[in-house]
Image 1 (cartoon, rainbow, N blue to C red):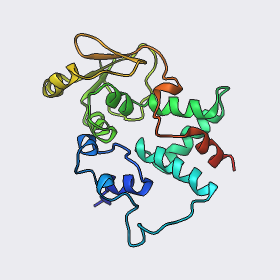
Image 2: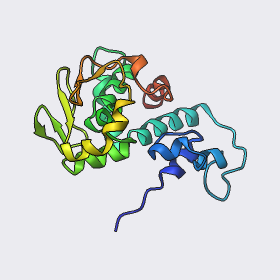
Image 3: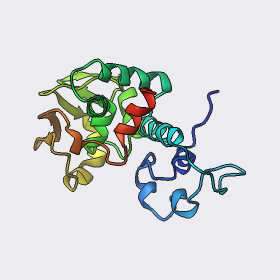
Amino acid sequence: MGRVVSYCKQCRREKTKLFLKGEKCTSPKCPVERRKYPPGQHGAAVVRMTEYGRRMREKQKARRMYGLSEHQFRNYFERAAKTKSATGSKLMELLERRLDNVVFRLGFAPSRQAARQAVHHGNIMVNGRKVNVPSFEIKIGDKVKLKAKMLERIGEKLKEYTAPAWLSMDPDQTGAIVRLPKKDDTERLIEESAIVEYYSR
């Protein structure tokens, strides 16, 4: 049996909400609101953060937020570094274009973890075909749709949800990618320049 991941402990370790548990993260039950220090016996102790430590924490925050292993995250960074674009901005673009993230951004799931599960279970269609790979890279013009049975459950919530500017939602609740995500469209909780500095050391 695999190790059970405590998403709330991950948020507490980074001392900020990573919004890994959907609605719980915005409720008074959120552990980050009640215990604003890292988990563990010495979590509440005051520790002086070095510049290297700050960069590493920023990398860990992004990795946990998008639900990636160290190996997966480094692969995305290396891909971004090989392009002519600014490495940090390209890294964030690649992360945002993952299918599980797009499903989350369209409001089809309350968190990236829930979106990843929906993809794994075959509940997501891309251009009319079932795709069950969370890392599937979405391109401009791709159409993303939730299976009818799942759509019925969240139909009312979707009417109140507004997708980011780089995505659009058709009247039949089909999401579309209208352009690539820009810097202002990506996670503002992440300082991508610190991640670039971490890997460039």
